[in-house]
Image (cartoon, rainbow, N blue to C red):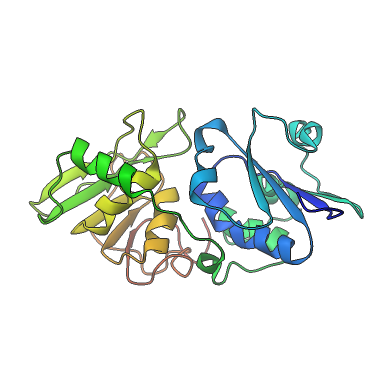
Length: 258
């Protein structure tokens, strides 16, 4: 911790996608002179190995960290004085009285009076090639062959939900992303980079694919998918500008709202 710097405590412990997207907000606070404290749920504690930004320190919510008492109160309202700022990003939609934002992701930036423009420029992912190769070997994948990668699940484990209607329209081998107990989502980066097609529900993987600049991606809505018709992409998908204009978005979430 820097000496005599005011501290900022960010309340956004879960939702890996939210954590990645909001790195620009944390960097902005660092530029304003804050030392940022960011507790994350135990499941995402591995993020400390993959994202290292000066001025931002991730903590496990189970550990001790400055102002943990305030974090545990889980207040909706922000707190600010000369020495401390409490920023409840996880409650952004509840903290904005009329919730004018286009979506929950945009709300976090509206709450901070910032824009998510160029959010990808505010963090780097430190690759762990050994873990990536371990997963490739475990799944017996030949990276020189053509294959699909399909991810049907979203939400933070153990409370995951699946969209079981995601089915690629080709005859290629399909690799399903499933929790193996020892893998991390970042371990899949090598497999994703070499995939012929990627089909995923709109989840944190979407932001990682955007960071990797992968273009052969198909995104599906965050529902159970029962009875869903994914015959044509939605040209007005609300998060297209955040991710990639070249992707196909099979979802009912449009520029007109939810």
